[in-house]
Length: 279
Image 1 (cartoon, rainbow, N blue to C red):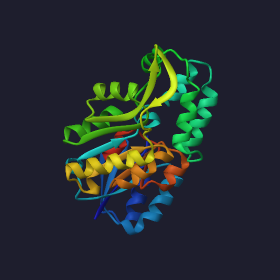
Image 2: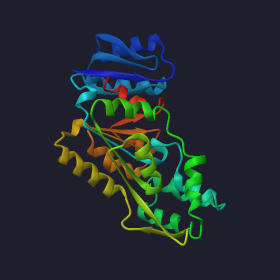
Image 3: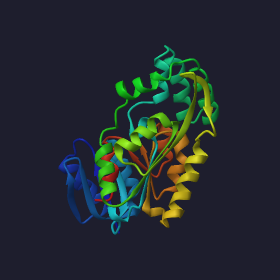
Image 4: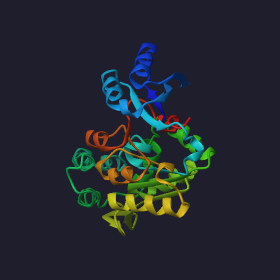
């Protein structure tokens, strides 16, 4: 048995009733004004439900009915354009007037059109000579959490889940977010700095798609968790291997390729929509 979780900023009662009919659900319960769960939904009807939700701009997810938030032991998140609203490297580039050039490379990499390692190396090289103080300006002036991020984290953390922030971005930002949000672990790339300026190089191995996947698997096994006790969130093509290793891999406001290939997707509500799957 499954519950069908339906989410959107505005959900018509008639749409919920139609979805209950399509999914053979026996009861509709409100989670909050933007989220409802339909109990007893039949997974065999997923295609019809998906078509209806796409036509009516609703997010949906079929979740095993016996799974609750206390069963989730690990939550893994990408940072840029997932946990936060910006791509940090693009905003750093804006400090030296080259945001369009860097953003173009970023977008191509997130769509899966460029190798991530190559794209990061090219982008970081363009930042050579920038004062390291620009990183703090980006954090102070431009970095904002994605809508629903804090509520999502509070809910999972209160239930006992460990949290991992793993990013192809930079430790300058992940370390500050880890402290600010009480995250269990944070992993990212180290920008090389010499004499107070960026050298245009990354210090150490680059955190790419393979590293994200490997870190998720390693901590899942360390904690002795089943796949269905792990949630992962991301928006770019380099997140897909990680999303497929989680029981609940969620494309969050993601690129079309990621939405198409990820097991779950949140497009119309905030990150707290992922927590709602298990309430």
